[in-house]
Length: 200
Image (cartoon, rainbow, N blue to C red):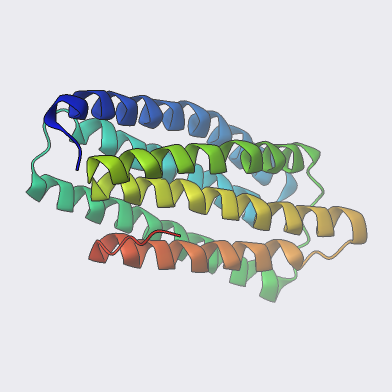
């Protein structure tokens, strides 16, 4: 159990982690969406859109610690969930269009570099958020940590799709990676909606 005296310290840490998430993901979103648009890669665009969802989630955390009551915390979880569902719907629809139309994305060295960087940064950030949220007893901070963890999974999926497309010309790896991103987003959205955020 956390003492009352420690709560302000933990809240400040949660806010700092949220601002770090906002800063990283704004850059990540701009780079990914621009590179994905240039390369016609729905997986890369989807990754960039997920970064915008990360920004929204982190903003919710900052908002929460400006005096969010328990009822508002539940609404914050719903906002995080809805953002996942919106991302999943768009990415899945575009991936199906690309698969049926056999749309062949170009290679994206910038996207590959971004995916590698995200694979380094996101697991560290997710772990710090999860520990802070668990110590505080805040389901919203823990939910936000899972969203950050999802970003790390998405980075691995994105990297696989981009590398396969670039090295062996498997154009379909990109929309398949995008569909995997959509499935993960739906799963995380369901958990956030129900407030059933489980630890690894």
